[in-house]
Length: 381
Image 1 (cartoon, rainbow, N blue to C red):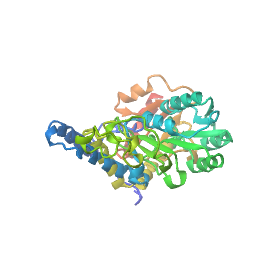
Image 2 (cartoon, helix red, strand yellow; image 1 turned 120 degrees about the vertical axis):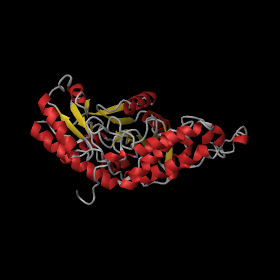
Image 3 (cartoon, one colour; image 1 turned 135 degrees about the vertical axis):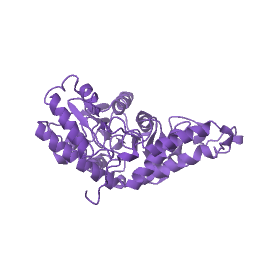
Image 4 (tube, rainbow, N blue to C red; image 1 turned 30 degrees about the vertical axis):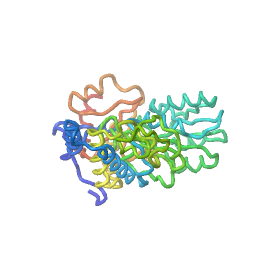
């Protein structure tokens, strides 16, 4: 393979030999070492007398550092969250908008990144502007056309969750700057699999649930908070977010001051002894792999998927509008009934989203998996 790519990492995961799992956008498998770390963390809770107050914070700070490294950001800008919807709600509570302004979202957006903005638009007596799906796959141009002097916020992903269609966030950022509009990002379907230029894009908030491309456990996630929001209002008023919270004896000496920077936005019970060690292990593995190499490897696998898909007769997005880690095989009409189940019965796993067959490999896949998938698919169509 190309020197900037990685070989197949399947041995690091507990995936049976006869299983073709091309469904990371649904939920990633845990790394073996992450599972071990989580089990060991859970065992710690069986001996609580060995857990000291600093232990509630130590792993959380390590996760903050590793997440910051992935984003090329200071750990001070990272909050720990349980879900994308939690982070998006925190963003909505703190975003600076005037009554009557527009909020831009995408058509067929994931519900967590729609309902909260629908609610905020109603609260501010503004307009929720839904950008329609482009026929040519060029979401960026559609979004740019929707931005106006009345735009207060764009709430966007880096790629669309149904088919991986790509959004040029650098161009969006420049357009939003002209109207002093905010930018909130849901990176759940991209962070960990493709590069993200935080320095240029500068979102107000960027949220990522960790159970997909960050290879973490369910009910974990991270949120980038721009420094201008560090004095904002968290969703919860929990004890650990306050200054000197490690001093358990004096927690009843109530404090108005928060922990520094983005830590005030941490979820309650953020020091989860089972989930955080598993998340930390996964983040550190991604760092060791290096995101550019992960992205390049997934690009090569998806290129093979696209080549197969075109030969099979699917509509495939043009390369400029397609994410490197994500392929949507679009049917001209509805997806045949029972197709996903029939594939699953052959131990081949993908998702159906809208009119797309969503095929999302990771480093545990190789070209043999791609061949087996299309061989099975061709027999079923």
